[in-house]
Length: 146
Image (cartoon, rainbow, N blue to C red):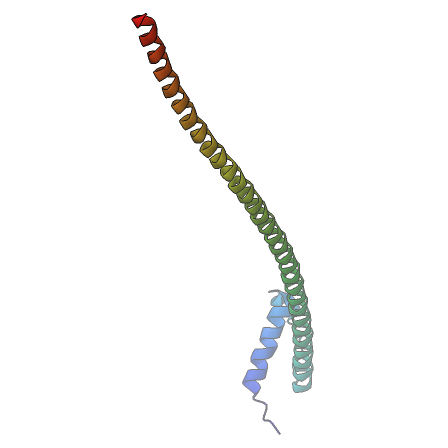
């Protein structure tokens, strides 16, 4: 059987009185029990009160944990939705860039073909001009001789 140490019980009773009366010890000092049974009953009441407060605090902690869990789930869902949206946006932009790149490549090829055609036409025209210049020179020489 545990031994009850009297000075510790008195300390607990005084501490209980200070907590329950909120510093109004003097006005209730006549109501506190003075016998061992009374002090033990007061101590049991104090322990019971502390157990009730502990249970309330545990319930509050559990409630806060649930709130935290709910908030984490909410933000995790938002994060996943944002990630899904961003992945879709990036994919859409990549597809758009590929489409534009392909279009630009086709346009570059078309322009290169036109440049090649124009270069050929230019060469042909230059040859025609040279031929016409020689002909003019020949005609001028014939007219000049007559």
